[in-house]
Image (cartoon, rainbow, N blue to C red; front, side, top):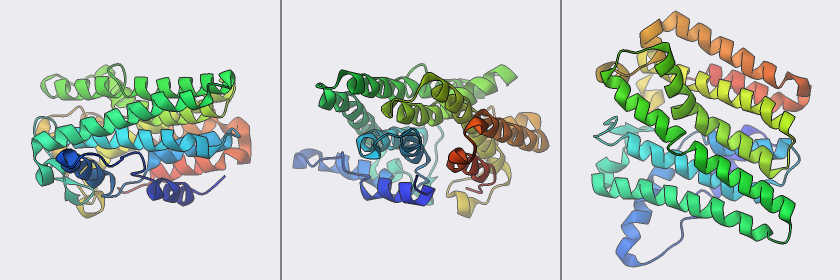
Length: 296
């Protein structure tokens, strides 16, 4: 397996490969799409997809279009999240948000363009394996995993609960729903899809699903913590937005100490889920540790 930075460099080297040139009349759309892709980022989700495929013995070249697609979906969600009607942010990764550069209408279209490009890609890739029914089935499963967990019963459902939660009394059930869908679904999707592309067995997929969901919920809780006590220069976005908007933020509801304890518990549980693989899974256990202590 490669290191996190090596996987990330692979992703960065082909980040806009799926955004093809077209008519001049819509060139600003592709410029806006590229803008948000190229302002930086951890590339956590595409790296997880490539690493999961690699771990299970798959070909990461075959997985690469899916890795790009998951980053396109993630980036589209951030463009839309930043809009005035949603989180109303001026900064993303230290740069002006898409709508501040291109206007609200073009930002909406750029998000739509990234999502549709991702969907076109993951639904088209399985057709390359029409002469290998078993591999085609794995690719269809991976495509469905990505699109469904990004959709109205996955990430978008979590975003909906997050918006509606601003006007509701926060409950543990509501916070958990937001964590599981707004954030964890788009962590679980690439892990599961990467394993599916490699033809992994159900036991491996189940164990890594626990790992991914726990890591995803932990990721959101740390985001909640950083919204209170993070460094704005490192985060590249405005602090205190959750309090300002009345978000169902775990740290605001339960307190910082309880949030940090839950973050640690989830990280330990995530690593335990894949402990059966021992040193072979060190990429994932070390990643979980690094995510627990990140500052941006």
